[in-house]
Length: 546
Image 1 (cartoon, rainbow, N blue to C red):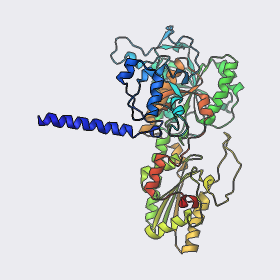
Image 2 (tube, helix red, strand yellow):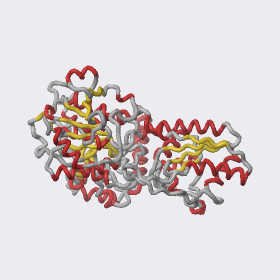
Image 3 (spheres, rainbow, N blue to C red):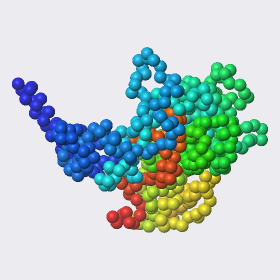
Image 4 (cartoon, helix red, strand yellow):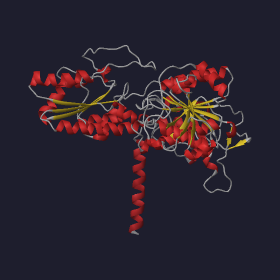
């Protein structure tokens, strides 16, 4: 009896605890990548209340445990699903069954393949920023179609001619994406004509001095016998290599020439690996193909080492970059602790967003100061950066600083030499402050405090770009590549494949090309954790007064 009484006491106490936690949560606590659990109220089910009204009511009354099944909400928010262009008029067309559907195999089940209405779950909302600021924003948040294999295809695999191109800067994992696209096309869909286009967009129509920029891609050496030609590249071992086996470039985009060459060669699928600039080019290309009424599937695989695409959870290469940056910070910490007044200064990638610097600092745990483009600061003054460095050197005799490459734009009280130069993609190159800091930190310490500062500067910029992908990024690359192939074979086009709310989704080019970079805000949880970890605030008089 005691055991039974104890059980009921514990059960009801636990229930009360859960309810108290749920009651304490308001709309502001619902984050875009957080699952907000909804449960169906029996009374609501019996009275057949309108699902959307129930959702609105539950938002207005956070104490009331009234919520909905995901399936019941799907029809109500169908008009908020971002539609993706498709060539297939009837998604259930049975002319070309998916070759991966094998009868009498236990591992292939009906739930493995998606339908035309498959969307990411209701909780995988995406909105600008980190939080839902209003009820209207919560209810009106867009959703995307799920990426994945379909039971029936638009393309006959025997007639597919696919091309893969890499654009923009290199980053860890590009070769993995190339490999996995080839592997899925070859073994999953039995496609035998797969081409690699060298040196970016210009490779579609330009030629090098000695050869065409088109090469045949095959899984391994054994498959060479099935393909005839001189320029053949086996991809079996590409996942162990950094960079891109196809080469890359920026700019030199000519939509007319690209379409003309694709039509001449009979290519009907294009897989483009690149960032925001690449997707802007793909958007222009898609409009031209529509105008010419040409059926060529354009599929993107998002690539930016800075992880600053607004919609997507994470881009490949970012985890590897953080890992390499973390070891560079470790070396800077060793150098700083080996001198009487030692300063280790590490510069990492991050032209407009400081995600690499922030996450590397959080992972390393030895960073004392983190400078990012989104956080303005003063160099001089009582509450400035230099005074904080001097205070730490006098108390602890060492200081480790991590800075993003674009942090020069965040300096408020020093006029740096600003350049109007742009890279080949048209991106403005921010002023470089690393040379100024290297010189002035040492000078400031000697002139004002007679501190003989030893400063070591480490710039692992190209190491972050060129290293092979780690295990986490390899897995992400394989998912993106395989789902890109599934998307094209099902007849979808003009979209990129990315992770949204933990689910692989098809995102229209326009969403990527026209979105603003995902920047770190003051209320970002990770940024707040870093401030607490380092013990320092923004180096401005405004922040200090607040």
